[in-house]
Image (cartoon, rainbow, N blue to C red; front, side, top):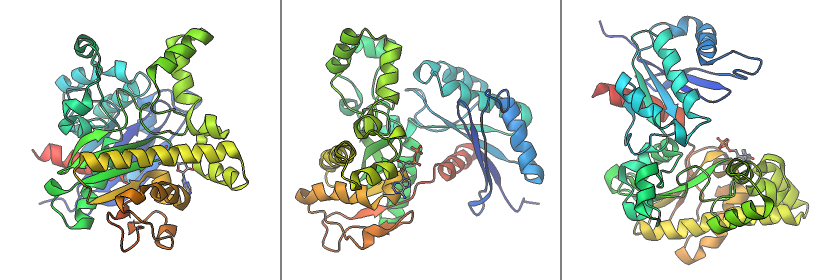
Length: 380
Ligand code: ADP
């Protein structure tokens, strides 16, 4: 007899926390959701212990899990799609730890812990880079340096947030009633980390993050695009090591540094700017400016977008940032509907009726995308 439900566990195993969600993929209903924190710092000693806690939390629900999907930060040039994490694929993924020394050991540790605890249940890796790497052409994906470095060290643009961009691309095609293979979009994932993707015929042709998630937009604590010579100049003047400079650019820059708000939290920035703080105002304008800049560029690259899609904590919730971005898109004939723009966290068109390109909010759901990919990969 066929089982009435198809249980898929989604695991996001980070350096110090493990998030999980359990789905019934016959209906895509979420059966459970949870978080284990402070791994290795007062909580569970490692990912195996954290997972044991997940099993305890799930109780009866932990029985009969059919498949497990894992978020994995980096798939390099090897993983152009999600993949079952066989021994051979685990060995390939382990070679990519250099690209994510903080996240990759935790991601792969989560998979190994699942192999032990859920014996015989297949594990699928869903890579944050794969959606980009699958279709991005070399003219967008390569850096203009001597190719010998690219080849030797795997230096190129990989892009991140791929699972989110993929989810909203599929959801947008459905919303616009267009076949996925014919949809052209600019997808904007705006959160603590932010990235845009240019989607042509359903696939990525460019994205703003690069070799690492540091490139592109101004983010919570990351600077985004910067002249490499500026980095070298600071290193030389302040006698900073590569590791120290990495910390400055990733953890001590962006909206936090410009706006003087811890973590660069968008709500705090908006509140501070409303009181007339010039740093906070500048930070918000930098975020809006660079987002608009890339929307214009990507609209050109995709040959005219069917829609601009916004998602992520800021994209889904911040009417103010959306308004600041769209205000700069007049040359594309894009206009906001201020009343519609009040919406938060639901699928909605926020552009005005006469807008040449619609602006659509689509809340992302990376966990559901991971569960869908897991089912798809294992059905092959
Ligand atoms: P992460 O990249 O860590 O997943 P999120 O996608 O959750 O982050 O986005 C976090 C950002 O979203 C923060 O800057 C936060 O201020 C912003 N945000 C969340 N809710 C709102 C809101 N109601 N209004 C404005 N900004 C919001």
